[in-house]
Amino acid sequence: IGDYGGEIDNWRWPRHSGDFTFFRAYVGPDGQPADHDVANVPYHPPQHLTLATRPLRAGDFVMVAGYPGSTSRLRTAAEVDEAVSWTYPHSIERAETFMAALEELNKEDPRRLIKTTPTIRGLSNQLLKARGIVHGLVQGGAAAARRKSDAALAAWIDADPARRARDGDLFPRLMALDEQRRRDRARQAAWGEALQFGRLLGAANTIVRLAEERPKPDADRDRPFSNATGNGWFKRRPRCKNCTIATSIAPC
Image (tube, rainbow, N blue to C red):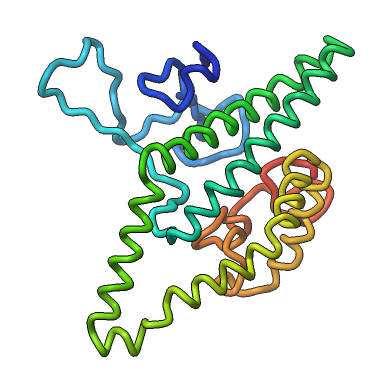
């Protein structure tokens, strides 16, 4: 509901924006989920939170609900170094290149501004975050700390014969996997960009992947398509009116 300060204030505290949404949910007269109908009534849950009617005071209880979608806390020092030397610099360059191209398009035809603004804001968001992460990893000392912790772990493994026999080759194996992934990283990055900025291509890719994963038992599905660990694509999602694909938008 608000974008105060733009990207200047983003990813910082205090952040001046309004990242919250109000919903008014309706149910059938019996209080159960129902399709749209004029007879539906507002839903009243048995428990609910109330908005504070006075400013917070010292000692007041405050609860913030949230859960990270992913974490990089277990990245190795080699992975952190790659993030600093390639991953985030590539992300920064990509955002700068796309933003410059969109700005040129807007100069050619100002009517495009309303269409390009959401993409430019998203790219600005990514750009500021990537720059901040690099700063934190380098100037903030996170990369050096991870190299130190990896060295300590390697020493701990080597100090015990049983641990050395079981895990002595841990870091060489991880480095071999990193090297294998690095050989393909540029192609994977290009494919990710194509999916991000080519909406029809992204939709086609999702439909094909859904068709591939649907016949599999849920435990065998690729993680993003698993009901247990991913987006729950095959749970009770609305069906496209034109085909049998479960989708969050209809028709596909």
